Image: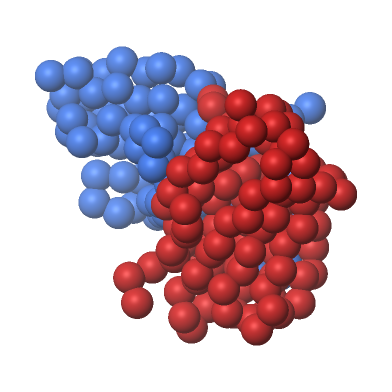
Length: 114
Length: 112
């Protein structure tokens, strides 16, 4: 296991389309996090899973966003009816011990909505 | 008021110099503190955790001042490869469910 994997690396979509991203965490990590980062900003927390349970959602996660982690392993983040403001880097991270020891991030999915 | 504030820079520093960054956080209940490094168009990577007693890792020293709610990072004998954005990060919990809160980052450029 080489770390947190995210797919795709880049996604260009037309406004109004739906997109789905995938994250495969480090295999022994039971906690998985999604963040969003725009240019010149730090990453912003979106949502968090412990195993398959989604335990926390940021107010940044509008109704057009949904995340799942069906078997407590990989996770998907779907954005419906994309808007130009959704253009960002979507980062996934995983950990075994919550926030006490920091997270390991994946390389991210860069979304461009045109 | 922003939860984690950092000077965005850029800091232009000659190679071999010592450079220090500070950041301040607003929530006094914060319990875990970190510095992350982020290279251009790459993911953030954990540089070091920050402890109340201060801690050192090679050329890097991190300090936490809980009373004043600020965190510092000192880089000695800076290298060209230290050029990056340094993100100050806090968490309310030592091991709970809340996410990490990131500052906007401080951009460091080491010049030959």
